[in-house]
Length: 490
Image (cartoon, rainbow, N blue to C red):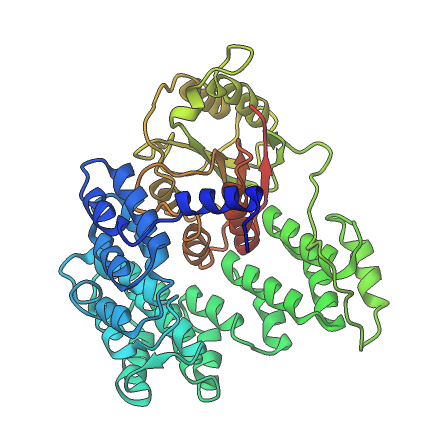
């Protein structure tokens, strides 16, 4: 049989692009290159090459000092299924490494591998000092226990360690992660733990408990919590219940909720349940919900609801500002300084757009600005009222910024979360981190979600790019945090 010329041409292109086993030596050398982008390219090549030797090298790349390399390696290492490779992650190249970042990345990868994971090795990380490391191990236990891939002494050592991590006196976020892991380990034997968490002083426990299958009565009670994140969890739980009583509870809550962003979150959930386009006026929602039959079920829709702004509300580069407690995170990396067709840089256009936005904010709004390069550059330590004096000072400060360099979104994001009053973060940029310890498109949505959910913070994004990977990433961030993603031409 002969191969036609078009098919032969396609085959040649495929073979030219697909790494061959002989490439292993070249990729190994490239993995030792002084330039981080060369090393990252080697990681991509090794992942494409596949096989035990290539994946072993990828596990070794978890210790790379550049986040762009190590984060990419973590993504691909999380796709292994070979018992021998998973064992490497349990050992000195992973959870038992002396490098704390290798331990963290190994736990992150073990949360996603499709093979048996040793829970007894994971619980070693519960002795770490930093909550992020403990939570990474607990998240891995939660994921693998739910998938029935958790090995080790589940009913003995692992359960005991989780119960200890759940006890009072530890960080709220660690205790919440322990509760989620414990329920995944033993769904039928943890009802009392979940009920106790609903009344815990740590709001993170209450947030976690409301997402673990509690009754609608408990969810309705959560709507009255003084902590925003707990009310967010209650609203999400009621929306997921998809029942007439839940719809009526959401409509009634809209009438009394004082937080603007949470009002809009409630509207979006009601829109998704009903297919209607009412906004923040609770009266039509109450009328609709009161007419529902008790056995009502919502129609399945692709559209999850999209809150539109009030006619007089401010907007930033086309994104409505649905919050009175907002921090703007603005990427100042190289793309911000490239001139457009009219000769103006994106930074100059953002200067104008930010002025139009801030000058329209009502004085009831509190805001902050955090432009970022390799480091976050906050205007203030916390939110400031949007008085004319403050907005003028903020605009003068931002318009004078000439910072350039790589873009580390993760550090700016974590700094913004340190403000206890913020409920909305708005990221403007090309969406592609070019520096920092957290880098990979496909890891970011889950990482951001787990950081934001205990705060009830929504993450909105304005992408100045049409790259598919960027849009997929930030659309997922919006879906997971109750935020929105828009694209813009600057």
